[in-house]
Amino acid sequence: MSSSSSHHTRCAACKYLRKSCPSDCIFSPYFPSNNPQRFSFVHKIFGASNVGKMLKQLPVELRGEAADAMHFEATCRMENRVYGCVRIISQLQQQIQNVEIELAMTRAEIALFSSTSSCSSNPNPNSFTQSQQNDESVIGQYDHHFFNF
Image (cartoon, rainbow, N blue to C red):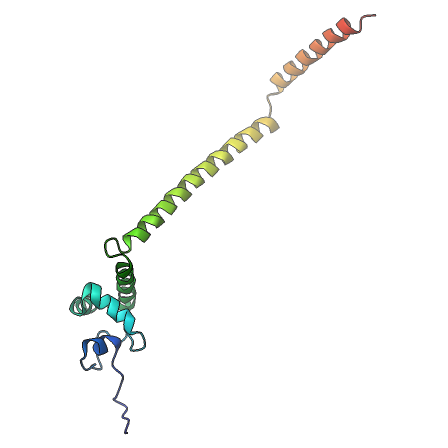
């Protein structure tokens, strides 16, 4: 067997489609031969032609993320044909809503504690003096009433 430097293994897409893999294959960087299931799922949901068109329309630096997103959506669709990743999105939105409610309640508690502590640490001196005088006069009445010898 002779090996040449121009020989490269076919990507998972070309293997799946049973065609030769050109050196400038649009699928090769995103669907390596060691992960055939990745392309299989994407092909079943989107079709090879559509995947190729989507990748070609994107700048090279965004193609990897697009392939990952298509794989994620395809995997979700394989698990749940009707909803796909919508179920996950709904769950995450519900979690966000729950955390926002919890945050609002925590902020309300903080505001309540802040206003309560500021009132107790900064009392109105007039009301304190008046209540203290009222307490002393009441106590004084009891002293005279109960301890009148």
